[in-house]
Length: 312
Image (tube, rainbow, N blue to C red; front, top):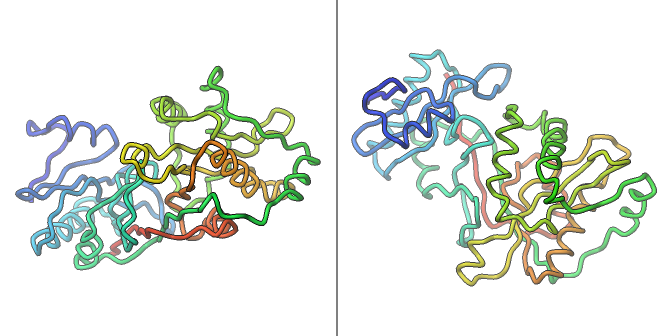
């Protein structure tokens, strides 16, 4: 197995992109390759992990051995006792492999690794660390309605508005600050610098319909948001118009309980009014409260994913 470092003369443009994301080195063996992260990675059970990501693997015995060699290298050379993959360093970047699916076409921004990756990682000594799913809601199907919940939140001073493209960066900064508060206890959470967070959304501005990004405020302070994108892949292929519910967050104040449900109901209704037929509740961690919200809208799971881990 060959190891390429940032100082290596063998670095190419793709390697440099991965090094910019924090990869410590690139491992190669013939046509097989993977990026390895062993610094500034998330913590799990009180210790930092190493990760294997950006994997180029075929469905072979050699690929299984290569994954094992990458994991052993991270343990022996960098003292990492837990190796997680596939993950490009942290959960803000590309991660997860597919466990099972119903054959539905991929949606925009979905990280779809080849279906055999789960068998490769398992054969290399990895086991499931965490599970995720994506589900779909039929927007034409009647729902129970949450008018009373909406009214209660209004009485507590909650108002909803759409994101303001004229003050886009200001709204994104508020979204970032709330995300820090809302997601700080999430599984494998790592902080992301505000400029990088804001930059990711600024670069996607042309893909955003501001009518479908809702902010909840109390006295002008952001207390919740739901960030959605149209599934441009479905639009371009002529498939059923679908909205992707990418991120949902709310303030942990118990007086605001139910806010996530209200935000999802409202954005799904607005999407339906715009001609969307489905809403994709994307890439939800199995223990996340947003999964319970999806169940309230009779969401049907169509794909399941996992992160795999190997401990020493």
